[in-house]
Length: 369
Length: 244
Ligand SMILES: Nc1ncnc2c1ncn2[C@@H]1O[C@H](COP(=O)(O)OP(=O)(O)OP(=O)(O)O)[C@@H](O)[C@H]1O
Ligand SMILES: [Mg+2]
Image (cartoon, rainbow over all chains, first blue to last red; front, side, top):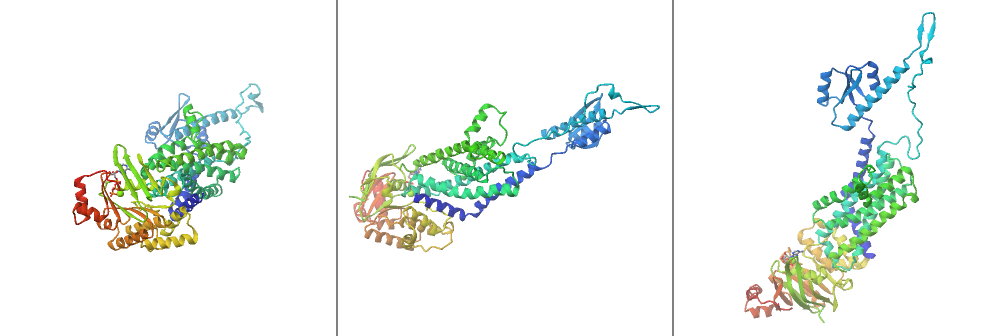
């Protein structure tokens, strides 16, 4: 135990001597979260739709639907779409709308089609609303709507939405934010701890330690404590900065968020140490990162996996990051308490225990006892 | 009872057998030199003696008990061929860390560090990271960290490599003093004048001891005036299987 403490103190001192790593581990995640927040928070794209032979009503409806418009002749329009100078072209052919789209960016194509569809619906509605009573000579008015049963084209009113979780102000990134916080901490801790333990091996100090009266578990515990303490500070700063500076919504307990972040960091730290066993250079460590961490992050539930094949969903359930991401979302977005995330935490801590044991066993390679 | 005894040590890396069954015993207060060319298996052997590596077969006993054992390691000091220091820490921090593993803290550590640095002939600069020390200074710092807890048995892998003649002589004087005080040293080297200062020498080549004895004894048996010639003599004779 005393030896573990000595290792812990040593690791904290190494951090102290390496302010750049300290800076990177705290500032880099915050910077990434800040950038993502801006990217996702940017207003929706306004497609440039060229209009050919369509009525003026339709053009203004297109603009209401969020498109930029410009008049263009048929050939000219197609040429401009060809060079991606415009996103779409709409014209009337034989009384039906025809739309050309540039097509290489699905998001832009979607924006054009949405705008055209909405404009079409709107002009139809306004057409019906234009049915004014017919005035006959002598002041008689015939309101044909009284005699014919017209379908009701009233423009739909916005439905009233009640938020069970979250709020009206939430942007689309806010759903991903909690996951990104956990994922970034996981990523940076993995890299730092893995490389730090790799240096212990390549620098000969691990071998030297194995000639000294220190138990293998004391060494691993010392690492866990050293990096644990550091990641408490790191997660606290990253979480607080994300919530109070970048402006992520947090509807849950900040302490619970920190507990989840710390648990993820510990998994990552022990995984990093274990993986460093299979690398002999820092470049190889980076290669292993790509196989071991990137897939975990992709399958963490950051992106919706509910429609993917079963094996992929199963795989995501094998990875610890998934449980951390789940728990982060539950607490930050659905304000769940410990009762709602205890299972995720249990899984994370099971990973911590297993990985701790695996590291102690892996060190047997250097010394049996 | 020898302080350290090794019997029939065989070590293999993959297909390559590096040690072919070597045995040795070291008595209290003795300086045993392991002399041999590069690649002979010196480091491989001392790693096994220090408990850092385990042989494929054979037995190592320190203070009469089988290695590896944490209790025995407490009484041993080991200096690796590489410096094995934390380069991003200062000299004092390195000493503190290694000392702490042997239970040295506070004033006891301060005193031990001062003595060890004196023995290693190093004056440390506060605040300077080990990375910024010269190669020879790092070597001496590495030696100091191995001496901190005043081990009864010291295993040193080329402790003076990269050092100037003056520091080499001074450090060997401290080795002799330690031996005179009843401590036991095993030192690898391929420098002949260092070999002269050992009580006994084990000449190692290609994983076997080709000869063993005091420097004078070896020279006499080879009919040579220098250890270098003696080594060449035994190497040509190719007599294997001597036990130290
Ligand atoms: N980890 C290892 N894996 C494979 N082969 C090894 C390993 N360590 C040592 N060897 C081989 O064992 C042999 C002896 O190496 P060793 O390091 O013991 O030599 P040495 O006598 O200490 O040499 P030097 O004086 O250069 O330090 C060499 O042929 C070396 O290639
Ligand atoms: Mg060597």
